[in-house]
Length: 408
Image (cartoon, rainbow, N blue to C red; front, side):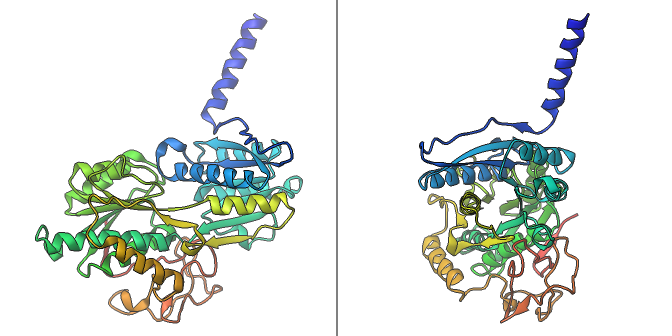
């Protein structure tokens, strides 16, 4: 009976572990006998099989590991997969802290409140905790909590230029009318991060296709493959000729192709899954931040409480162009726009390029990520542009501009 009871308890424990965040074993890189070694934690909302958001973080992790190995730094990663923004992510932070990780990265927006429950405990004050894409940690009083995000709105603008070039080609070739140049956008939530992205994308498209309009469908989830596919399908049925997304999976790409629409991706090159639809994609290269932060911790240096870099730093990039289907002249136009973004002659949110309720934007406080006005923040409009991610890394552009329709 005792043996049977022990077996039952063992099986119950295994089942409990299975429903929590899944973990991979420590991953030593083998940088050599003289290498400095650091143990690093990474908490992910999905896994590499999503071929989108989490997969992009894993690419960043692997590239950073190789770059640090070349500098004599050996990284042992412990990755927690398929966590959710609830007590599971709190437990994951605790487990990684107890496992001896010196720095722990949280890869999803909703993880930060749960991360802070662990990071702010006295016993973990020497461990660095990072909430990627968030905005609370850099303003708190704890030196071991950090935020990080890249200026992905620059990449969105560039991807929008590629999309606009294709739509203008379809107009010029007589395949669609100017009024039919409609983009459908699958958005996760109506948060500033998503609104900033699709607005930048739309402005990039309109800079080369003046008649373009956009419809946005929210799925109210960061990662729901079925909902994302259904949203893309509905947008195509509503007349959208091109689909893009701010959601974690590749299903909008495959749906767009099945409906005969074009597509641009986020986080990953999706040409393999939709070769007849996918024009290009844009992504954050997280290896830039991972390598910088980990090296600083190894060398005993403070890491920034709020980190932001962009296109000119290599932290934002486009994926490969699908040269079989992009519009003629796309590569040359991209080179021109990239140069303008890097030297500042092109501002993504140039206030002369959009209106809100028919009026040009003249005044706007920087916004919190939930879109609420915060008068303690700085004036975001100056020198003729709304300056996104200037005062904090997390996006705060949450305006609804003319030309974009939000669907119920």
